[in-house]
Each structure stands twice: as structure tokens, then as C-alpha cells.
Length: 294
Ligand SMILES: Cc1ncc(COP(=O)(O)O)c(C=O)c1O
Image 1 (tube, protein in one colour):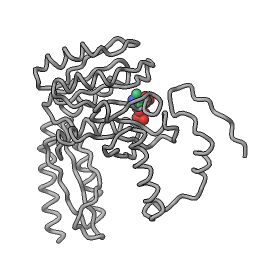
Image 2 (cartoon, rainbow, N blue to C red):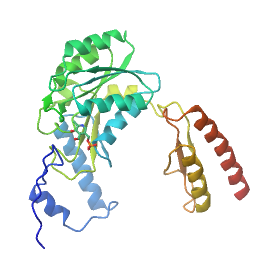
Image 3 (tube, rainbow, N blue to C red):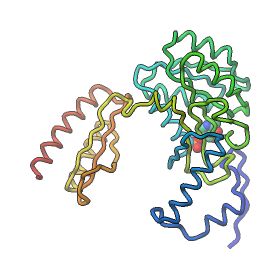
């Protein structure tokens, strides 16, 4: 079989080096086998070198946007002040995410093609009067090709007591970003750009300062785990929730026998009051059904 060479005229996914493609053609390792665990541990350790950090680098089975969302979801609770400085399409994504998570978003928009000016960020943070909890910005703004001064932006954010989260999806690995030396709190990246791997993995380094700001369940709404014995119950409840605009996910639930399944329902700031009332009624109903089935 002959494979035609494809030329992708975007900033990514970047072409895979032949050595990477060849490894992908090898038999797949069992993902719980010691051989895989060893490789995974080694990769996580080496990612720290790429990130130039001693902080943990978390890995996500998502595109880069998924890791961006994780930063917002963990740093922002509804009503928190978030300052976003954007200079192109991807910077705007931070503002959209902050809005979706209920932040009071202050969005400083720089002309496309220009660099973000740390002095303007200083003013935006000052205007928040010390209330800004997190500052979100972009290292390499792929839509315009501009590289921002992450070191200066980090200093400004910290001067106002805010943690900084940087989107380095297209820059990490090609533009120097010494995470620890510059004291950057969260650095988000993706597998398919400078790291020259297939898309589908994203990464985020997290400083102690950022961990201190993040607390579990930042949305302020309860996470509810409902064990269900009967797959039909699961289907029925799942549809009932989706009809109400609530998106349930299956999640591991400690203590649930193997024959049952944990049902995790996360209400976000995007849900309306009516949807939440409706959710509570549904849960009462599920609990009733559960008791009956026991
Ligand atoms: C700077 C930047 N941020 C975020 C993203 C979004 O990454 P993904 O498409 O992996 O979700 C991209 C993708 O091009 C990007 O270049």
C-alpha cells in the first residue's frame, strides 16, 4: 500500500517524525501492564524537563482546549474575577471558558498582530482592585504568530496577587518557557504541535500556588453519585437528565459493587435555575427508584 504525503497548511498537527509513526505501528501495550506503567512514568518525568519544572505535569486525554478548560474549572468559581489578556483567536478562548464557568471576566483585547502590553495588563489587574484571582493569557498566539512576554506578564500577575495560567499549546518545546525560573503557575500544552506527537493528549503543569487556589468542586454545586443496579435505570435516568440540559458522566465510584455503576452528575454554572430544580426532582425520583430496587 502506498501512502500519499499530506501537507497540512496549519500550525498543527505538525508532521510526525518517521520514528514516531513507526512506534505507533508496533503492537499496543496493555495500558495496565507494568511495561506501560514504566513508560508512562518515564514520559511524565521527562515532560518535567520539557516544561523546565519540578511541579507535577498533569496529562489529559483531550485536545489542548481540554487542558485549558481544566485550568479554568479548577481556578475559577462562579463570581470570581478573572482577567484575560488576548491577542488573537486562541486568547479569546480563555475568555469564553471563564464566562462559561461563571467568572466575572475582565477581557483585555490587544489588536491582532500586536503583542500584549504588560503595562496594560497591570492596569486591568489594578482596575479589579485586588479581586482578580487568576490571569489567563497566551504564550504563542497561533492565529497571528505573535509570541508574548510570559516572564513580564507573570511578574505583573503576581504583583496583583493573581495566579497566571498560560496557553503554550503551540509554543512549548520551541519557544523557551522556563516554568520554574519565571514562576509560572499553570502552563497548558498539547501533543500535536511542537511536541510532534499525534493529537489527543494535553498537559498542564501546576504550581503549589495554583494548587492552593484550586479547591475541589469549584463550581459550588454538588457532585452526586448515584449507584444504579440496572442498566435500564441508567439509560432512563441519563435520558431524563439530558432532556433537562444536564450532562451526566459515568465515573468510578468507590464502594459500588462491580455489578453496579456510579452515576456522576455535574451541574455547572451554565445550567439554569429551572434545570437545577428539575435535576433535584429527578434525583429524588432516582433515589426512590433505587430504594425500591433494593
Ligand atoms: C495557542 C493555541 N491554543 C489552543 C489551541 C487549541 O488546541 P486544540 O486544538 O488541541 O484543542 C491551539 C490549537 O491550534 C493553539 O494553537
